[in-house]
Amino acid sequence: MLVLVVAACAGKPPPPAAPSRPVSLVLPAADGGEVELSAYRGKLVILHVFTTWSIEATGDAPILDAADAADDVVVIGIALDLDGYTVVAPWRKALGVHYLIAVADDAFRTGGGPLGSVNAVPFTVILDRSGRITKRIDRPLVDGDLDQL
Image 1 (cartoon, rainbow, N blue to C red):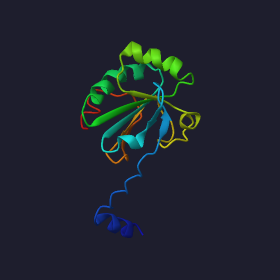
Image 2 (spheres, one colour):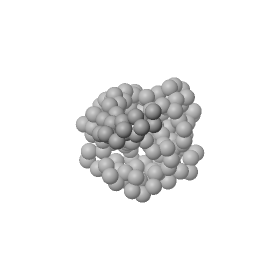
Image 3 (cartoon, helix red, strand yellow):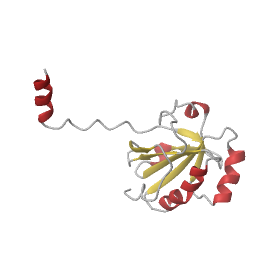
Image 4 (cartoon, rainbow, N blue to C red):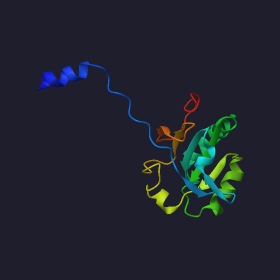
Protein backbone atom coordinates (compact mmCIF):
# COMPACT_ATOMS: atom_id res chain seq x y z
CA MET A 1 0.00 0.00 0.00
CA LEU A 2 2.79 2.43 0.90
CA VAL A 3 4.43 1.68 -2.46
CA LEU A 4 1.26 2.80 -4.27
CA VAL A 5 1.09 6.07 -2.31
CA VAL A 6 4.76 6.83 -2.98
CA ALA A 7 4.37 5.94 -6.66
CA ALA A 8 1.33 8.18 -6.97
CA CYS A 9 3.20 11.10 -5.38
CA ALA A 10 6.24 10.63 -7.62
CA GLY A 11 4.31 11.60 -10.78
CA LYS A 12 3.22 15.03 -11.88
CA PRO A 13 2.36 17.51 -9.16
CA PRO A 14 -1.36 17.88 -8.57
CA PRO A 15 -3.07 20.62 -10.55
CA PRO A 16 -3.46 23.93 -8.74
CA ALA A 17 -6.66 24.38 -6.81
CA ALA A 18 -9.47 25.99 -8.75
CA PRO A 19 -9.57 29.73 -8.12
CA SER A 20 -12.15 30.89 -5.66
CA ARG A 21 -15.23 32.70 -6.86
CA PRO A 22 -15.12 36.49 -6.81
CA VAL A 23 -15.92 37.88 -3.39
CA SER A 24 -19.33 39.51 -3.22
CA LEU A 25 -19.68 42.00 -0.39
CA VAL A 26 -21.69 45.15 0.23
CA LEU A 27 -21.25 47.02 3.51
CA PRO A 28 -22.18 50.49 4.75
CA ALA A 29 -19.45 53.05 4.10
CA ALA A 30 -18.23 55.08 7.07
CA ASP A 31 -18.77 58.25 5.01
CA GLY A 32 -22.30 57.27 4.00
CA GLY A 33 -23.56 55.15 1.16
CA GLU A 34 -22.22 51.67 0.54
CA VAL A 35 -18.96 49.97 -0.36
CA GLU A 36 -19.61 47.30 -2.99
CA LEU A 37 -16.61 45.18 -3.96
CA SER A 38 -17.86 44.46 -7.48
CA ALA A 39 -17.36 48.17 -8.28
CA TYR A 40 -13.59 47.65 -7.99
CA ARG A 41 -13.19 44.74 -10.42
CA GLY A 42 -10.17 45.34 -12.61
CA LYS A 43 -8.12 46.66 -9.69
CA LEU A 44 -6.23 44.91 -6.94
CA VAL A 45 -8.22 45.23 -3.73
CA ILE A 46 -6.77 45.09 -0.23
CA LEU A 47 -9.35 44.43 2.48
CA HIS A 48 -8.07 45.26 5.96
CA VAL A 49 -10.30 44.05 8.79
CA PHE A 50 -9.63 45.93 12.02
CA THR A 51 -10.90 47.54 15.19
CA THR A 52 -10.13 51.12 16.15
CA TRP A 53 -8.85 50.04 19.55
CA SER A 54 -6.24 47.74 18.03
CA ILE A 55 -2.73 49.16 18.32
CA GLU A 56 -1.66 46.87 15.48
CA ALA A 57 -4.36 48.26 13.17
CA THR A 58 -3.15 51.75 13.95
CA GLY A 59 0.33 50.66 12.89
CA ASP A 60 -1.04 49.20 9.65
CA ALA A 61 -2.64 52.48 8.55
CA PRO A 62 0.49 54.09 7.02
CA ILE A 63 1.30 50.89 5.07
CA LEU A 64 -2.25 50.77 3.73
CA ASP A 65 -2.32 54.48 2.86
CA ALA A 66 0.88 54.02 0.85
CA ALA A 67 -0.62 51.04 -1.01
CA ASP A 68 -3.82 52.98 -1.72
CA ALA A 69 -1.78 55.68 -3.47
CA ALA A 70 -0.99 53.26 -6.34
CA ASP A 71 -3.15 53.74 -9.44
CA ASP A 72 -4.39 50.16 -9.74
CA VAL A 73 -4.89 49.39 -6.03
CA VAL A 74 -7.90 50.06 -3.81
CA VAL A 75 -7.66 49.70 -0.04
CA ILE A 76 -10.84 49.18 1.95
CA GLY A 77 -10.73 49.05 5.73
CA ILE A 78 -13.54 47.07 7.35
CA ALA A 79 -14.16 48.21 10.93
CA LEU A 80 -15.50 45.59 13.32
CA ASP A 81 -16.36 48.18 15.97
CA LEU A 82 -19.92 47.83 17.25
CA ASP A 83 -20.30 51.62 17.53
CA GLY A 84 -19.52 52.04 13.83
CA TYR A 85 -19.16 55.57 12.54
CA THR A 86 -19.07 57.23 15.96
CA VAL A 87 -15.69 55.62 16.73
CA VAL A 88 -14.38 55.11 13.19
CA ALA A 89 -14.63 58.76 12.10
CA PRO A 90 -12.40 60.17 14.89
CA TRP A 91 -9.93 57.26 14.49
CA ARG A 92 -9.69 57.92 10.76
CA LYS A 93 -9.23 61.66 11.22
CA ALA A 94 -6.61 61.27 13.95
CA LEU A 95 -4.52 58.94 11.76
CA GLY A 96 -5.08 60.84 8.53
CA VAL A 97 -6.39 57.72 6.81
CA HIS A 98 -7.38 58.34 3.18
CA TYR A 99 -8.54 54.90 2.08
CA LEU A 100 -12.18 53.78 2.14
CA ILE A 101 -13.65 52.50 5.39
CA ALA A 102 -16.68 50.23 5.59
CA VAL A 103 -18.44 49.17 8.77
CA ALA A 104 -18.96 45.44 9.31
CA ASP A 105 -22.42 44.10 9.97
CA ASP A 106 -23.23 41.39 12.53
CA ALA A 107 -22.95 38.56 10.00
CA PHE A 108 -19.47 39.69 8.98
CA ARG A 109 -18.34 40.08 12.61
CA THR A 110 -19.39 36.53 13.45
CA GLY A 111 -17.58 34.98 10.49
CA GLY A 112 -20.62 34.62 8.27
CA GLY A 113 -19.27 36.96 5.60
CA PRO A 114 -17.39 35.98 2.45
CA LEU A 115 -14.00 36.29 4.16
CA GLY A 116 -14.85 33.62 6.72
CA SER A 117 -13.78 33.49 10.33
CA VAL A 118 -12.30 36.42 12.15
CA ASN A 119 -9.32 34.56 13.61
CA ALA A 120 -7.12 37.58 14.28
CA VAL A 121 -7.53 41.33 14.35
CA PRO A 122 -6.31 42.91 12.25
CA PHE A 123 -6.23 40.67 9.20
CA THR A 124 -5.78 41.51 5.54
CA VAL A 125 -7.16 39.87 2.41
CA ILE A 126 -5.84 40.52 -1.09
CA LEU A 127 -8.22 40.22 -4.04
CA ASP A 128 -6.98 39.92 -7.61
CA ARG A 129 -8.39 42.01 -10.46
CA SER A 130 -11.31 39.62 -10.87
CA GLY A 131 -12.24 39.85 -7.18
CA ARG A 132 -10.86 36.46 -6.10
CA ILE A 133 -8.94 35.96 -2.86
CA THR A 134 -5.25 35.46 -3.56
CA LYS A 135 -3.80 35.92 -0.08
CA ARG A 136 -4.88 36.26 3.54
CA ILE A 137 -2.62 37.63 6.26
CA ASP A 138 -3.90 36.81 9.77
CA ARG A 139 -1.64 39.21 11.64
CA PRO A 140 -0.62 42.86 11.56
CA LEU A 141 1.15 43.97 8.41
CA VAL A 142 4.91 44.43 8.26
CA ASP A 143 6.91 46.41 5.75
CA GLY A 144 7.16 44.42 2.55
CA ASP A 145 3.91 42.44 2.91
CA LEU A 146 2.23 44.44 0.15
CA ASP A 147 5.30 45.20 -1.99
CA GLN A 148 4.74 42.17 -4.23
CA LEU A 149 1.44 43.62 -5.45
